[in-house]
Image 1 (cartoon, rainbow, N blue to C red):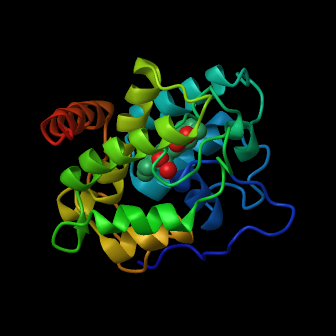
Image 2 (cartoon, rainbow, N blue to C red; image 1 turned 90 degrees about the horizontal axis):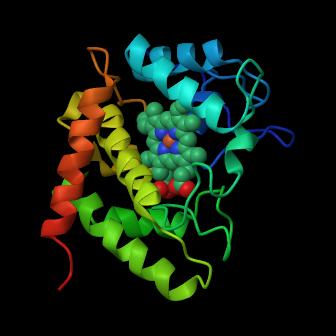
Length: 221
Ligand code: HEM
């Protein structure tokens, strides 16, 4: 089945530093404006767009609404721009808040990510290596650089979400073309398929641990 229509954001629409949530808004799973959606709308979007299990979608949405102080209120993608809540330094495809645009994708960083492909796919090894590169770059250029255990855990958690959800139908590997379209246009590639079975929290957590282990293995000496 084709994906719901893709439309890039208009002038008054808002977006977040999360490529996946932006993608859900660009395909209309979330309001295209990116503004004022409820927790149940977010849960529905995560289930319909990415086939997350009801429990995992609810857990993610509840965590997000709580962390941004929006419980029982509506939230906008622009709320997620706030540095230091979920948004952190050394992102894979965004600059650090102190040195550049921490919300919009940096296409040069996506190109860098794509150079870490293995057999035309972005996989665990690609991301494990890239984490070190992005960490070193931020540490060197950002005088306000902050990356504690929480930021590290968020960062590897995001990589696990990426490989487990976007790579669900392709063995946790993502075709470079699919990855490029996802990050640069925040669009689901025509050939991309969601997971056939609902994705739960423990799959993401376990794979996060695998990526962290791989990152230790490939750590530059
Ligand atoms: C309630 C659900 C979610 C919330 C509130 C959320 C929020 C965020 C935020 C605030 C960031 C920015 C972190 C940074 O500074 O790099 C982020 C990054 C990211 N998110 Fe999400 N996200 C959610 C769900 C997802 C899902 C389902 C996926 C995968 C399909 C995903 C994939 C990513 C990736 C790969 C990044 C890292 C981007 C980068 O490092 O450049 N997120 N998310």
